[in-house]
Length: 244
Image (cartoon, rainbow, N blue to C red; front, side, top):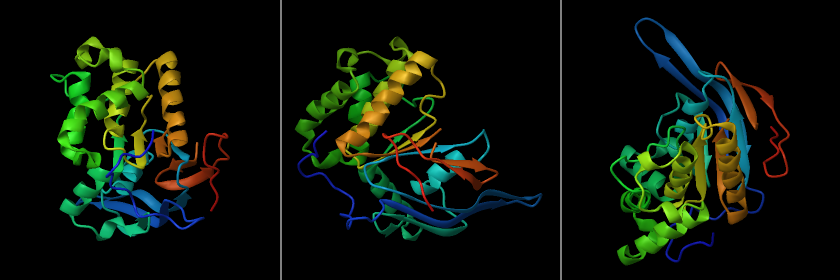
């Protein structure tokens, strides 16, 4: 997908500079009853225009890690740099604006608005994210283009209840692409799908790197156990090879 004229992009990177650099990242929740460490001294980098995946069982810290990387959660310690910008240094309003312009989020349970059609769900993302630098009159064409990219244009007028799980997830991907963000974050995007639908959705996701996107997918890049990295993977040719 070509960049949209007027699109707000992340700061251009110098050659060899990772899009995301995480160093000694920790997140601890303290209550009167206990102290719970969710992330424990996590360090890794993510190259631009790559597929980077995080695996681990339920409760291993995958979602929290993605939330910290998108500014939804704050780290207890450590640093997160995205295109050279330190996310923990931003205020909540600035983080929300940054996220709307630069990050597309794909959820396991789709999170589509049930009373809106597929097209309207994508249009809402444009409304909330600033329109990807486009004029309002160009939003409909942009939304239809995003549905085209995931082979869902023919279903543009259908409500989510009239779509299969795999089709809903494709609409969710189109919604994440609406503002043409350079970074996409998918939290177990195929975990609620049957094997056939999951394979089709993963094929769509893997192809996004060829369109200039960086995709972080919670599902083989690093394995998390009790908040710590326990294994790093050599991924397939469509994915990033992770090294310390």
